[in-house]
Length: 244
Image 1 (tube, rainbow, N blue to C red):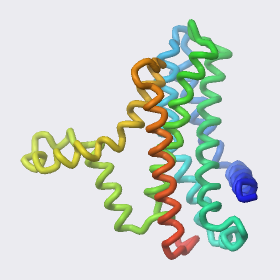
Image 2 (cartoon, rainbow, N blue to C red):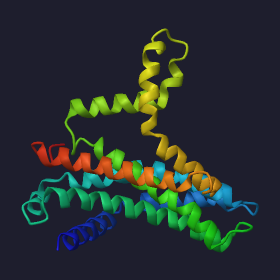
Image 3 (cartoon, rainbow, N blue to C red):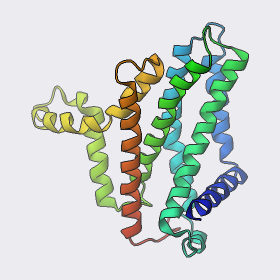
Image 4 (cartoon, rainbow, N blue to C red):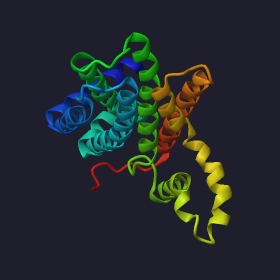
């Protein structure tokens, strides 16, 4: 019963997002990416999954933020008071974002496969390349969910952003004396982004002989952890929708 409520709410969110016209942004960017980079006659399978992986991760950031802003409206108090509850409400927003980005990635791959099929591209290549990309979308959307002002308060969000900044941009501090103090933190925090990086590499190589399955498990486990942290925070905080 709860899964049905979440599915109905997810479908409603996607319908409202489409009616608002916001989906045209995703569609325009998707078609533009394919036309600019993947319409060439010499496109390879490696290029396809490399560009699609980077594109879907970037799109996950935008689309998840956009759908969360759609959920941050005063009229959604009516949804929250229904049996769906806070957990179902947030899960529906998250699932809608993930499904929409998956659809955009599928459009890119389908257009390339139909109109400019790379040499050697088949169902095994499609499966091995797409699976880590799908999980990366779920992971990036989970990170965006956890960093949203709808989910966490300002101070924890700033701390999470600082952790992410140290993990991603430590190389810019190599010339600074303070780097020796941040280096241990970077070594620790960088492990948090390793599943996403490894997933992108796995999609490009499509070689599962060197721990590929462990990469998939790590992507899924980290996504699940982040979503549950977001649900925990969202369930405990004082909620004021439509405050912007």
